[in-house]
Length: 276
Image 1 (spheres, rainbow, N blue to C red):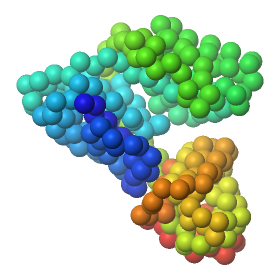
Image 2 (cartoon, rainbow, N blue to C red):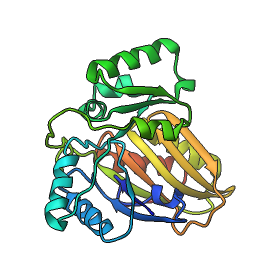
Image 3 (cartoon, rainbow, N blue to C red):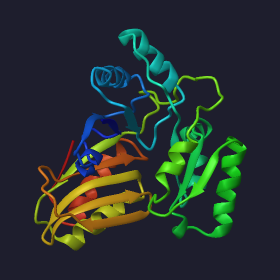
């Protein structure tokens, strides 16, 4: 059997709703990074619990802002608690080809991700120029000269090939840069169901400039949609599965000012919005 730990940075689980459960044991950890002190204990508990089951492989899907440079220290703690050990086989880092060079200057965690992963996937190459992709590849090699680099669109690649390339990175463990004080603030917003579809989309697009990430579900007068935004890239798709809550998680660039922004924009577009 396979175990999966999904780490959702926001307080509301979104990714977990999109994962099929057949034959998979899954644990969701929300509201922070699993490598940060804020929920690291929960991560350790989840890893310990998986050792009680007949599971051959555990996959960890960390937050896009995760710094996993302390993963082996965490696994050593698990071994001391359970007297059983995981074999850590490596990490895959997914790079957003559209925004990596811009964000790497602002977010040191992105460099850590590259340094402590031996497989690097440059994703969204269809949205970037060849010159920029070359520059991204050069930046990766500067950070990690031994990285196995592949290019992809929609993260489509040969999974068996990549898994066979996984290996431990020859770097000493470090304390994660994910801390309570350094973490971006996140908010969960709910937009009243059956709101005007066009107004709702324009509302989200105006928030995007002040957010690293927006994702979740909305229920407009045209039906239920899955929303996925990264910086200025807006993506929305019809969603036909049952959803209990229609919420959006906003990971903010501007902290508490986001509340004023959301409040003002909701008035502008005549939407009833609640913020948690």
